[in-house]
Image 1 (spheres, rainbow, N blue to C red):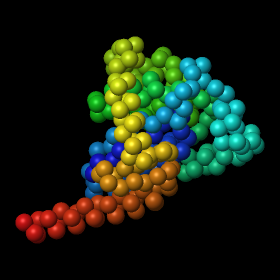
Image 2 (tube, helix red, strand yellow):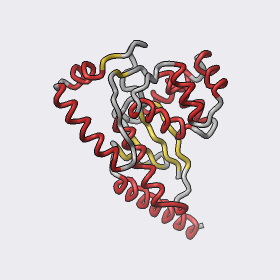
Image 3 (cartoon, helix red, strand yellow):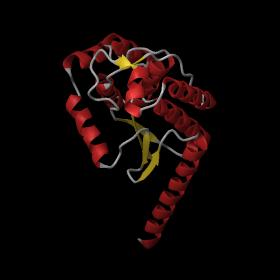
Length: 220
């Protein structure tokens, strides 16, 4: 099964969603061979390199108070803990375009998911600046990628056109919020769902795909 995970590094529900999806896939085990690809989505494409205070940013964007933000973080922490993801302090929000360029490069090498997990932990777990090249290189090394090659990707501006094209593709496909999980280019699961929701959807799609295959074979 092909799975596309459309997300942004600074999206907390994306951290929950990917961890939940991982749990669901572990439950299914070898019954479901999967190719999982990370896909880009920028929540704040116009954010400058200096970033922004996260409370000020969320208060303005969603018109909510600091108290509401704190309450939301408590709920996120509980949801994360339930699937093995630990949230830490996050004081600022950052532009993620360079992170997406690096993720595209990593995905081409078959390690996009590993880098995505590491970036989510770096930002949401440790509060690191995921717009900083030194941080991105260190996280790439942590994910098992070559640090020198990662540095060259960031310095060269490589994969910028591919990232923008992919972002347009998902927007034109109707994706306006993340995480969005697309199964076999046909089925959409929206939001940071619990593992049970992902597992049920995966089993249902698997059964439907197998029934279609069996029907095609019988008709031929």
